Length: 307
Image 1 (cartoon, rainbow, N blue to C red):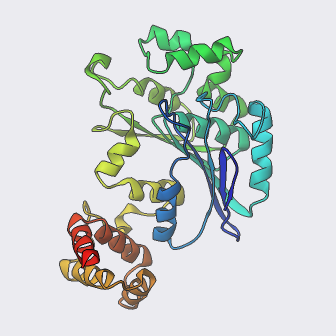
Image 2: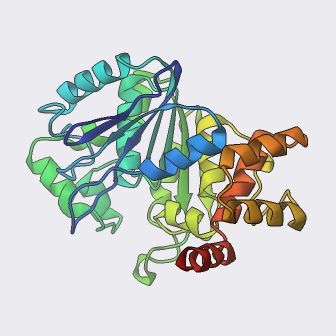
Image 3: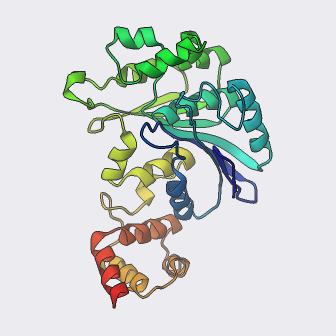
């Protein structure tokens, strides 16, 4: 693992897919990387290694001014990122982010020719005049600052950029339909951007009726985030995963997993035993992960550790 101020590289050490993540905006604390722990879990569920590059934008400029420490501006940052990517034996490249990070994932994905971009709750433009006209004040001060610092509204339009470069990048974009606050009206303000992106060839827009802007939190709450990431990044069939909303193993299997894990049995040993019984590896791994996050299991683990 290699780390600089605003880039974290996790090299799989072999030819493998690459996932590049982009951190979201944080206003009351320093910029942070996103999906670091989540993708380590996804890697274990998948059962094979993949490269990760994690990025964050301390300027909170939606990655339009580059990344401090990588480049002085967007172009030099992209050049530096190309060198980092070239140093990895990557078989394909996927960009991933939410909110500001989703915007960065699309912007950099189009510029770098990524195979796929997964973005959750991304804007399609940072045009302050457009946002004002639609009554979307959420990030208007950032848009106005960028405009004052010389970034024209036309430079921020990701839909226009996609048409301009004629990108072959596949876009998979997730949006919540529920407004963040009652003052926003009956529609989530993000749906304006969802509908703009939906006009692009090769773009798939997925709408979540019960989610607001922060789709990741919604997916975590309904315990679907791992299934969504595995499907969107690696095309894993969600039907192959055991989870609370779609159980594939009966109670006897779940008790067996719980008993063995409480006795500190090795995870990989459990997976091997389940494979011998004809169970797919990803089903076995997802069942173990589901048991380990069950509140009853966690309580039992805590009681045993206190003895």
